[in-house]
Image 1: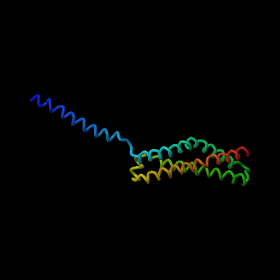
Image 2: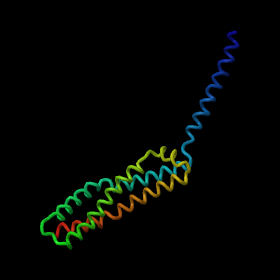
Image 3: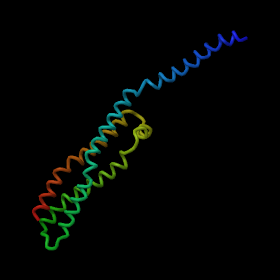
Image 4: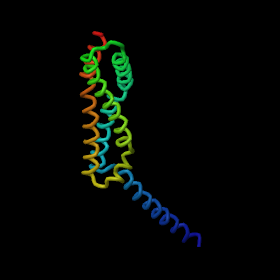
Length: 153
């Protein structure tokens, strides 16, 4: 009886280890090429966000300066109009950033589950990155415009 168990034990161990290796091998195979592309698109989108987000304080300060300028007594209509353009642009950028964060800042797995196909996930991240790049592109010229207005009061 003990001899039979002696021969069965290695066989059972071999079967048990073989099953674990199959599961381990499957888990170790890593992400698919599509998942790698989606992760790269997500990271690229986040990189654009990370360049714009720290500038939100600058946006607020510029808006405060423009608001103060527009509320001054005796301000000319020309100066008021000139200040309103960058003020409205900064407001749109700020609102756009808040809307973008509500829509885009979802975990990658959630986006995959919602959209389903690789193509839709990639299109989503490209569109979100493009939106962020559009906001980023407007910042420097707008800040230059604000500085010119505030320094020439």
